[in-house]
Image 1 (spheres, rainbow, N blue to C red):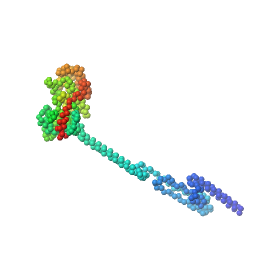
Image 2: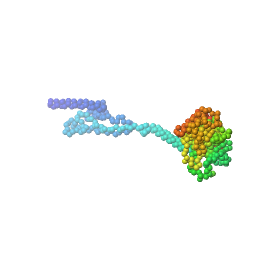
Image 3: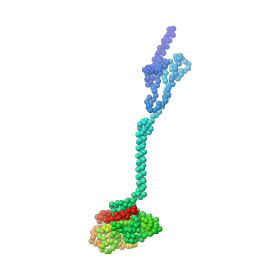
Image 4: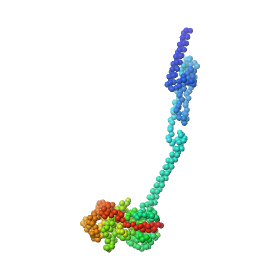
Length: 489
């Protein structure tokens, strides 16, 4: 009995020690896992051994409220402890079974992956987060669309205008050096060279009876407008379209285009043209220079036609300014023939370079065109003719003997000056003009100056600016031309 009692006491002590050790272990595990202290939780159910069941913390503590909570796998409850827990058993206990006096730990929770939350880009699915901002995004997109459409329409209008402009809506045309154009004539010059009617020109030229010049394939008429202003009309002698080839027509139109680009005060400017089929008409209308050609004044021996020293300098400088302007155009305009017979004089004896002839046979299209160097050479020979008053070349184009001696350096300009000018010029001025003539007539074209340099040298020698070499402007020119071009334009 005594032995049995000792055994029971010893067993109770062992059981108490084991329970105390179990409690200390459970407290240590709870503090490590972050679970609530079982001793402070009054609502936790107790297990058969009198200890509370410890549950894991709730997952997805910080899950956003606007998203659905993902499914949480509930851990399986621990199986009830066996009634015979105190009695030894030969079979192994279940996975979650505990021995007497042990704490039932919850099973491991199933691993749940926290889904990635993607924050929408500003303007994209904006109403998913903030229903009040969706309208603002749509308004901004609409504004962008309106701006793009407006820019596209503006660019389209610019393209259409450029095409219209290049096709002839606004073309480079005759812009007379006289200012103050108005009315129908101004509109005609904006859109191109005025196309005049044959009947109007026929009335101005007295039924084309006032002939002032004839050349192979051409005839020149003088016309007088009702206001008293005079014009020159150059017409082809072809009387039928059958005699007027396509090449002639192309050259006629090309001539109109090229002459309309010059527009210089010392040039015989193109005023208009006439193109009709019945009767066949191809005419160009030019300014009229009432004092004839320079050739007439240099080689006519009448006292009233002699040009004095100042007038000759003014003529020479005016021609140089005109050629300089023509060569500076892009592309440059080249005079086909430059001599005393192609330079006209106005009523105040200002020079006007002319290029009035157009091809009536098509041969001019195949003939070699002169270049700027050859024009400079021609100007040097013209300057020599103006100063000497003598022919520099024969009718066949051969240089006269005296001129050839000058070009070889055997004679100086002072030796060949016009006797009518004796005592009217300074020797230093003549020497400087001598140098200009020789530089223009260099044998090597590459060593010849351009017309810009020639004009600059002549301005230094004569002290004549461009305005001093230009003719006076008659205001009646454009007023009368406006009347005859009213219906034509």
